[in-house]
Length: 205
Image (cartoon, rainbow, N blue to C red; front, side, top):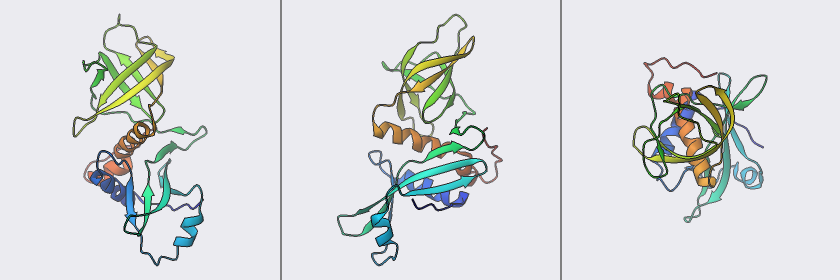
């Protein structure tokens, strides 16, 4: 495994590259010089990973090498896994500052509120006290800055209090998982600080 420590500015650069990719291609591609001395190493490496550290978070980008149709070597960066470092490592949870709209599979706005979201789970609350939280759900999360919707399937694992519960995500396929992970990456404080340098962004716990 080959690890490279990235700074926040380089994370932002990767995010900008990702934003230019088409909706059908949830990865980042960087072209390499054909004469690069790294080529033999990269060609034989297994489990190649690019590691970024931001405060007490680790961002782990899976990396793979491929040869383009024009026979140029390319590095492909897939969606990162974001880990909170601590006594018990866990997936980083995004807590939206503003309400994100949820819809059911018929396209009707859901009465549920999103409290937090990670690569493998989410927490929801109900708006009405007498409204039950479902055991199983299929929702669409409306993404900010575009209005696209991300499909989320999940099952309830535990109640948090009388009006909220935690759910385990059951994503349908690698494409959906990658799309969710790229979304979380773009919400990460390291990226937000680079895009809004005048705004102080506190790190999530």
